[in-house]
Length: 330
Ligand code: Q46
Ligand code: ZN
Image (cartoon, rainbow, N blue to C red; front, side, top):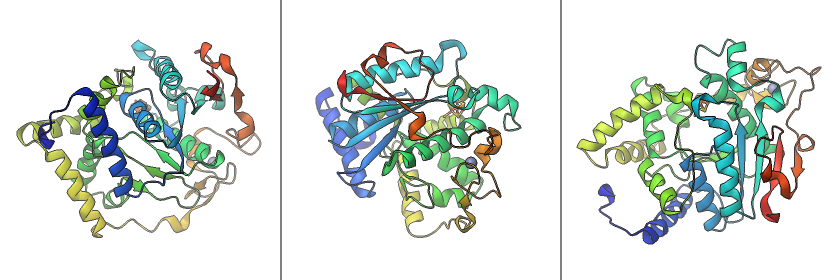
């Protein structure tokens, strides 16, 4: 770790990583020791490492996997779920894993709904982002979680920061933070790894023998965020520590009040179909994209719609239903 001037063996690296995460949790007041945490897991190194670290720190942290139905050359979604289930059995045996399969729950995969809606525009990322945000918020609220944790690392945050800065998106800059407090029915969101370089989370995953999906989602290839990551990596190679400084100094400026969020929250109201907060009149963007109406059933993710699975759940990797897996009995 050049920028920290540290050289550690595997065991001490792991200890340093876990302790640094706890310091970030405390520094940014992410959650208290008794918080009920929902970790959004994709099958990649960051989110699985995060779930692992939170469990090792003694937090009560469950997982949420959203099956997007993205295959590509590597069967991306199936591989991701298999890695997550394997990880959950071995590393967090007392936790729960919620699996929401989008095609089973809403009738189409993400690529299919993207093609069917005007949000497609070639890549399904817009439809995907909207759907993931919705499902995460809604499941966190319906299952009574205090906070939603994601595995965003410093490289992710710095790339988004660069993108928003180059376009002076002051509203987005005001909302880019390690902690977004709960408001108007939206879950509190935290990013405990926001100060770790991507190579640091990857090293932790390797040191802990965590098997994760190495490949990115096939739709991530060539996206703008990756372009900014490449630029920032060039900067970092010339000036070690530049990424961390860019992000941390931004957080200080933000804290000092340099960026103001637009006061659009006052326009939030409940979607007339699903009840989730929205600024759109009538139905929220999610219900409109998925063409969900009161007549078509409305609340598709509800505690009743999620079956609690027994011990055989992990034998059925092809399961396509929204489910909650209790891994404590394995
Ligand atoms: S948005 Fe786009 Fe990601 Fe969804 S379709 Fe894949 S690349 S997974 S973070
Ligand atoms: Zn809605």
